[in-house]
Amino acid sequence: EAQVTQNPRYLITVTGKKLTVTCSQNMNHEYMSWYRQDPGLGLRQIYYSMNVEVTDKGDVPEGYKVSRKEKRNFPLILESPSPNQTSLYFCASSALRDPRSPLHFGNGTRLTVT
Amino acid sequence: QQQVKQSPQSLIVQKGGISIINCAYENTAFDYFPWYQQFPGKGPALLIAIRPDVSEKKEGRFTISFNKSAKQFSLHIMDSQPGDSATYFCAAPINAGGTSYGKLTFGQGTILTVHP
Image 1: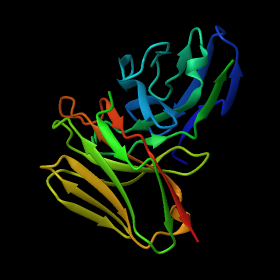
Image 2: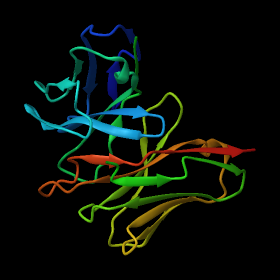
Image 3: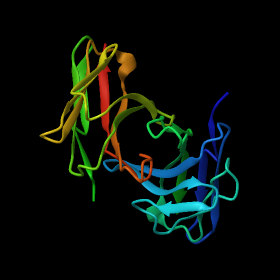
Image 4: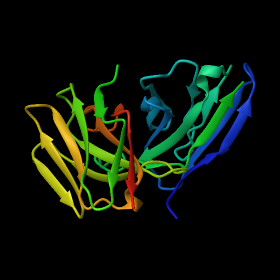
């Protein structure tokens, strides 16, 4: 089954403790992206990647890091999480060759930073 | 800055009614306008999309209307059903060297509730 898999689904952590949210897709997609969803603000893009070793900032990159060492994986790293990063996070992918192909989203990771 | 502004933030409709969600954009480089539907506990999924060279696109009970001069596009859900209750997002990708999916901007989202 074609899918984007995020782990974990829920994460509670404390300020300053480094964490990684994993994202993997099995559709051989070139494009991958991370979003955060907050009430009243919609989905805001954090980082995106057009291909392996190619990443770029979205609209809200501060406090986040990403890497794209393999085509299928695109982990999101919070080196020193803060309470304002409490949010619902989504990873997504699409086939870059078809610029109008749909984004496929994972089921989200709900992060709470205390 | 929010490049796509969506309204209303929430919408309550009776079963069988028409749901209308609006989006306005500023960047004329946008060349593709998708709508995504999100059910609780799930990620968004593509519902319907339109290109700016057409003024309307219909798929079943869902219709996108596009007004290029006003820089607005809207989603109409005819004969709304309780199963349509979800959060809806409009979006617009910025054309990046021939590929549309560089930065992808979403609207703020509309929570639709359809009462039986």
